[in-house]
Image (cartoon, rainbow, N blue to C red; front, side):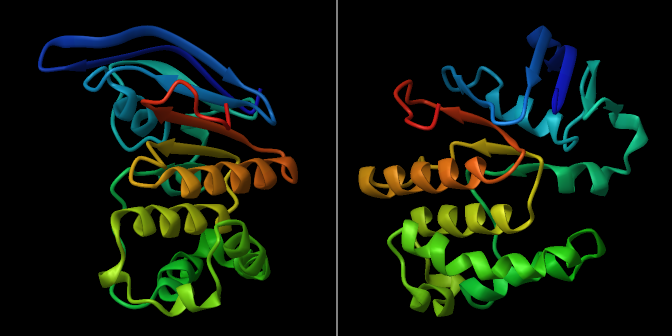
Length: 201
């Protein structure tokens, strides 16, 4: 499996949100977590990304135990995208280029060539890249966060309500882009949703 989790357990304030949770993601897998608010969906994604601690359980990536990876190296391969992304000051393009300065992402700079095609799939033109990040709507912030994640070429993409702020047409465009992106790479996607009909499941 690309990613494997065994016997994961999460506790908050003395209450067990989930326990004995196991999952395996193979290349090309798209797994949706559909559950009510407060059930721990976000905590699971953050725990898999090693952003929050687990009460118990182990994680493996391509057969290697998570302990073999530095935290930043793991998060570069198992990438979490928040429902409420934070951007730096500047333009959309500034935000897309910003992570590429870091050592673990420098070899991804050539992926910027994919941006025109991705923007077209999202029904945006190149002028979108010059918009101020401070003036974007909630849905546009989610689009930028998704594009930034795709540029970083993770092996496992963890999407937390990635289309929650989007209208139906934009949601379908995101689903189409994700399917296209996954069809060309040996990757997997785990995402949360309140919509059991989410099309990229």
